[in-house]
Image 1 (cartoon, rainbow, N blue to C red):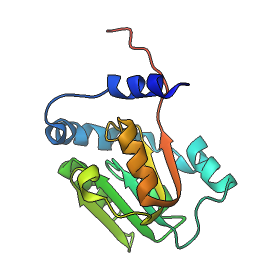
Image 2 (cartoon, helix red, strand yellow; image 1 turned 180 degrees about the horizontal axis):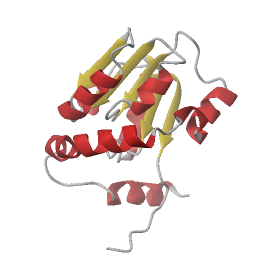
Image 3 (tube, rainbow, N blue to C red; image 1 turned 45 degrees about the vertical axis):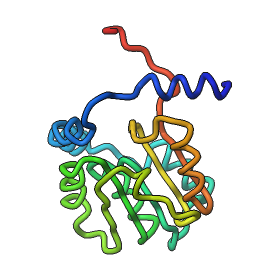
Length: 164
């Protein structure tokens, strides 16, 4: 895929308006939906890739951008003790704190990750899953800048919405 097409695909999904308010309003629904499904994240392709390629070590510093209710951080806590999650929604982070209450070295950061995370090579693994928080090439470049080793982005490359 050409970079121009990738950039167009990324920006086509961008939402307008107050992102914190939008995600705060979705937080309860999202939390209950993900809790109800009891999805086994360890078997998902993303975590199989992480395990098969040995991307994480016990002392890896992990950043989850757009961590939401912490569902991926919970799985990451089985692989490393140094976890940071960030989200624009304070209500999503409230659910994450509840879900991850037994994780000892956890840092949950509220705000715009592009403004908050600017230190070069601070994290061993920077992860993002299905979030509009990474919607531009400059966001991907920042992920690479703050990562010492690996970045992983889980996102649909294309989708169709019959309602449009």
